[in-house]
Amino acid sequence: MCSLLPDYAIKLAAELEASSRLRAAQYLVTKRPWLDLYGINVRPVAPFGSLSSKPFVDTALIHRTLPDELLLEIFSKMTPYTLGRAACVCRKWRYTIRNPVFWRNACLRAWQLNGVVENYKILQSEYHGSWRKMWLLRPRLRTDGLYVSRNTYIRAGVAEWKITNPVHIVCFSLISVLLVPHSVCYFRYLRFYPSGRFLYKNSSAKVKDVVKYMNFRASKADCVFSGQYTLSEDKVEAALLYPGLRPTVLRIRLRLRGTTEGANNRMDLLSLVTSGVNDAEASGPGEDILGVVERWQEDETHNPDVPAISHKRGLTPFVFVPFDEVETSVLNLPVDKMDFFVPG
Image (cartoon, rainbow, N blue to C red; front, top):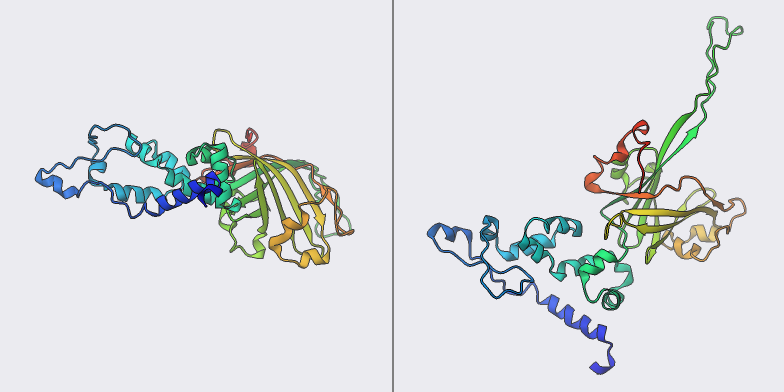
């Protein structure tokens, strides 16, 4: 029976069985820190991944006092990007964080739409069985912050009339007509979830003010719209439905990239199309709007009152802003100080 199974299925079953025994495993750890008060020196354990058979002596106080099972438990609660920072602290932490269990869990969460078996196939065929390599090299949408696109345009000024004699309204003179152009700045905000849903908001408010509304608890007054997306290699297809008297679907095509390996902190906006939908499509479940429009042509619309419009302005690339940097992001600066900003 086993000979009929593919290699990845056998390895999958073996790895899942090994991971189930992980929490029940007995770790060789320092007994307890207070024993040092009595002069009992307990030899610490060699770091994870070390091939040396010689006894490992770690003089750091935190490693002599913190049991290894607690260290692993702490690391298991961290996000992958926090793990990357923690790996820079010392050699033992770096070796410990190389444990594939951390990266396997992160990968299965990031690409949960593909399913466990499909992720294992990709792991074996493209990344030589390394979960950490898969995390670094495979394109993925980040869920620990917002993707922000900053757009500007020049708007002509509005004529202003000033009355010189407020008593005799009939007889007034025009002092000046001001047509001074000024720069307008607005943002497109995207927040993705591993489940295949995303949130979209178009606003002139800064990222530090918008982040508190970018969740599924936002009210209609916040103008935060939800939709669905798919990720195929580095291409993102997304769609959402604007409700109203004339329901309109917004179709977005993006290309994911990064400024460094594994960053995934930039997205190029390839196309932005609005189209009309008929009553049957508008009254269907909102979670299925992407399936409705995924085969549409770019100029296709199902409501003659709402023509298909391919927007050519406001296509500035998206920049990723983590949640812990929204208060200090340069995107919060005023327009006159942001002329130098280039997404990269």
